[in-house]
Image 1 (spheres, rainbow, N blue to C red):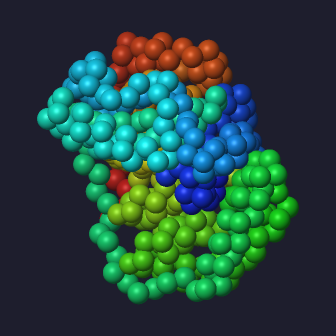
Image 2 (image 1 turned 90 degrees about the vertical axis):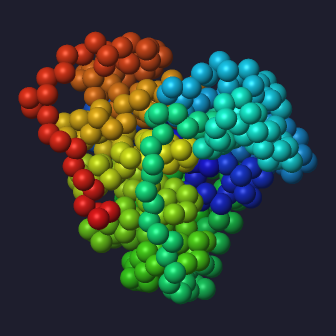
Length: 398
C-alpha cells in the first residue's frame, strides 16, 4: 500500500518483503513543496527520503526480523467508540511485526474488532514507514464517515500488453532496485512523468516514454478493457508516460475507479505526477472526480485521492472546496488527525483551504503541528452560502 509519496513502481513493495509499503517524506520536504506552490512554480523534484529505510529493511525482512509499530490510526470512526476499539486490539504501539506475522496480525485485529463491535472492519493496512522507520497500522472502521464507493464493472476484454512492453517494465523494476541499493532516491516529475535521478533507471524510463508515445492506443485499450489485472496495473503506470492529452487524462480518471485497488493506485499516482508538473496540467484534471474516494473504506483510496486533491486545491477553486466541505469534511478531519505528517498533511492542507486560512499561515500552522486550531477554524467559521456553487458531477465517470 502506498504512502503520500512513493516509488513509481508499486510492486517494489512485494520485492522488499512487505505487502503494503509507502515511502513517507519528512515535514521539511512537504513544506518545501508547499512553499514552491505559493509562487505557482512547477515542482521540479520529489525526494523520496525514506527509500534508504526500505533499503535497510529488505534484508531484515528476508531474515524474518521485525519492524516496530509506531502508531495505530483509524478512519471511518464517526459514531464509533474508539476507546472500546483500542482496548480490544491485540496489538499496541511498540509491538513488533514481521513479514511472517503480518497476515496473522491482520486476522486477529479483524476478529477482535468484530467481537467488540459486531461490525467488520473495512481495511487493516500496515504501512511502512514513519520518519523513524516504524510501521503505521491504519484500521478502517465502518462508521458514518465511510460511504459507498462505486467502482467500474470488471472488464472482460482479451487485450494484453505486448511482450516488449512488459520487458521494459521489468527492466525498470530491476534498475530501480539497483538504484535503491546504491542509495539513489530522487525523482524528477517536472515533465509530467516520473524520471529517476539514477542514470540507468532514467534511461529505461525514457525508453518506456518512447514506447508509450508510439503505442498509446494499445496501452489505453488494455487499461480500460483487459480482464487481466496485472496488465491493467502495468498499463496504468505506463499511461502516465504518454503525451498529455484529454484522452490520457480521461483514461486515467476512468482507471482511478477500477475495481482493482492496484489499478486505482497506479492511475491516481500518474495523475499526481502530472498535476505537479505545471499549473496548466493541474487545471486539466477535474477534482470532483476524486472527492468520493476520500470516504472509501480502503486506505489506499483515501491516501492517494487526498494526495491528488491537495495538489488540485492549491489554487482554491471555490466549487471544489465547497464540494470537499459538503461531501468529505468528516473524513478529512479524521485523516488530519493521523499521526504521520506524511499521510496527514494533505488533509490538513485541504481543511485549511476550506477554512480560507492564508496559505503561508496555513503552512506555518502545519509545520508547528497546530492541527486542532485548523479544524476549529472550520467549526467557528460563518458559512455564507450566497456565493457557493453546487458540487459538480464527474463527467469523466458518466
